[in-house]
Amino acid sequence: MDHSYLHKISIVFVLIGTCFMVISIITSLKINRAVSPETRQKWTIITSLMVSFLLGYSVFLFLQFQDIEKFFELIGAVVFLGGALFVFLVLLLIQNTLTLMNKTSQALEEKVIEHKQVSEELRQSRATLESIFNNAIPLCITDRNYEILQANEAYYNLFGHPAQQSTSQKCFESRPGKSCHSEKCPLDRIMQGEKEVVCDTLKKDDSGTEKAFIVTARPFFDANKEIIGIVESFQDISKRKRAEDAKEDLIEELQKALEEVNLLSGFLPICASCKKIRDDKGYWNQIEEYIRDHSEAEFSHSICPECAKKLYPELYKVMYPDKE
Image (cartoon, rainbow, N blue to C red; front, side, top):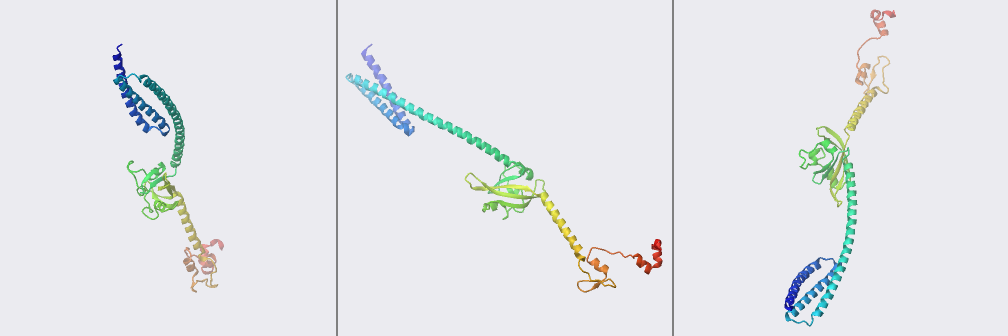
């Protein structure tokens, strides 16, 4: 093969290699800014070797164009040595990268396991909270703006669902009562610093029937322990209230009856002859008048057998023929 032909081919190969080396150096500089601090020093050395290779390529091209063959062997030896160092450093970098990848992978696996555990705990906690929230006692969560954030099915069965599911509903719209828009409002009292509010109130249910409830309100916190509303429970005490009212009415009736029974108690001054009774003011009253004024008794006049025999003997014979 012609020597000049080989000379030209070698120059073309070196020129192509020089172009690739320039691209590799530019790419390496970009990578050097992105790598971790642990590998940056080794990557800087590799980039320096690339620059050295580029200088070697440049010198080789210069000697080729000048047709100087004196330093070809030295340049070739330097290039081979640099290539060996380059490969060695690349292997070290790969080894370091693989070690970091293994550590990162292990850390990620631990994070994944931890995340699964946390997810399972959150799932269990959510299930527990849902079980507690969706019980038979009506519960409602209201924010600072009187908007109902969430309520359980027992609450909606009692007070009814909002007209449109997509729209928000105010608490005083869902369950209006005397404490709404007043200083007795549980939400206002909690926002003013009370830790718990327990009160009796009257509310109308979904059918419009007024019922008595014991309302227990406590603060509702966000993740930062800031109060963002209240949680309220509603205990229906209508039956107990009716029983208490009936008991009070019965006690009142009994007390009234007892007062009436006691009207004629104590000593009554009565005349030994005419049987008139003296009242507290000193006046003498007929016994039937006194008893009528001091009790619920009413009189209808009759005559006993002894008086009839004494005063009306003829009438006595007619009324009591068997006693003759």
